[in-house]
Image (tube, rainbow, N blue to C red; front, side, top):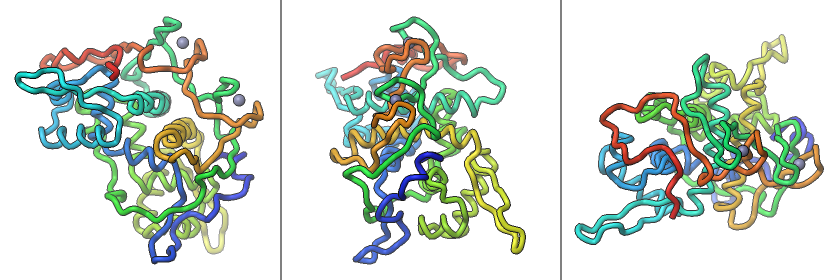
Length: 347
Ligand SMILES: [Zn+2]
Ligand SMILES: [Zn+2]
């Protein structure tokens, strides 16, 4: 997933786009894609975000997000069935349940922080980021850094190489609503401004993410992308156009006659490496059945590593229970104040 990575051999077998034995389309096993399936459902993501702000009860979520009851019920159910939340009885008469983060849900927190760091850096324009993170362990406003678990220095696309892990390979594509683009950012930010929501909007739909992932593998040309991904030309044209407009890819001419272009990651695009490997790490832990598709090596220290999100000040891993927040915006006066930002409530 980097200049260093792409000097290694490609994943085997090759990425999807080729029919399997039963005629099914295959795609490469990828812990990032699996994690994104959980995160890129906009409403589920927003519910999870409110959990990190301390929300546990139906009314609190509803007040914060303005969701229809049925949609909120479905998303709470989905996050519970995926194991990120658990239902806890808090009142016998009437019987009422609240939703608490499980270990799996809490473990998504570093992914949120990596997305937040990207959003704060690239998607706030000249404005102050919506929130400041305060790391209670060292007492300061901190910036999340995606680092090597071994040496705790920041990693980037240039200092990470990979090799196939025990879960490498390809699987049949499970048909979901995966071509749907993520929701309008105005909806995602209706409850509160959010750098994470903005970052997810950039990578949040399946095809956009796949194009970015292939760019990290140096698949840069239209027909190569089409062959690798089995993507319809009109969808690929649309996603490439959006990614160029977002400043994630740049369109560079590589041939004059006939005129041909390829798509390369910009500096902003290469900065998605941190959030992507944070997602990979979560997907490896919870969705890979103990068989990670990729093993990452930090070329600067020479060790295999798990991407870890640390505090830029004290270099300690950032845990949800150690954080508090300073909001740089004002909540609407009718907002249910029971969900004050602060330490998340953990099951
Ligand atoms: Zn290292
Ligand atoms: Zn710290």
